[in-house]
Length: 347
Image (cartoon, rainbow, N blue to C red; front, top):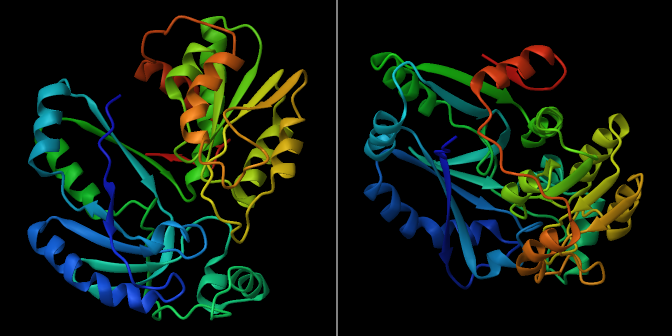
């Protein structure tokens, strides 16, 4: 189905602020933030600064993420033109929150992000933070971000509920249905989606059980369906994601496991080692293999972004026709049969 995202990433090129000095980044960003907010009255701007996972990138750019507070003309026009009368609008409601600081009416600053380090480590420090900063030759041994004044929807993953109000009003006026798919952590939905594909594959007569582990933006949805794989998506390459995959593999067994790994170029707090990933691959009954990954280069394996596509095609030999779209009745059948099994609410 068409996907209309609420959150967008806008990298803003800049030089100067030190990765471990968030206040410097706030000061630098004031002017572009004000310009952006004045030009876009229906958005909320989230300025994200993560010196742990984004250390390489934030030396050259500031991360602006903005969230739509209203559908806007383009989204409304698309829905009016393509959604049949009485059709359904799904709202993907990730309720992840993070300690943040309000810098303006529609301007939020977030220090740190979901991944390997905890909220407490970002804001209060600790042994892992000290070790990390020492390894990278920083002048600091803990970070000093501005004091958080509230927990708000997380910049990258969290859904800003004000958009839901506009969706409900728009849907009611046009006789559409609205269904909310709600969960707390982004990976809460991964076991549900994987099991849905496994169920769908059985309906398609897929032979053999293959798991395709995808990581952040390193994913291949078309070839997951074409090769008859069960896709399991991970937030990042950190220990919590490895644990999420391990929990899934404790409940399921697969003949083959194929794994893509996002590389961000930093030995960051909470990074899952290549040995950890290899151990998870060894859970396959017959074959476990990386896809596009150079184990010796990880997590500085930047070639993975151009290699994983060809490697999927080469390593996973099975081929199946692309099926017709899964119907809403089929989705409801699966959801009804598995109600209460996952950390996902349907309303």
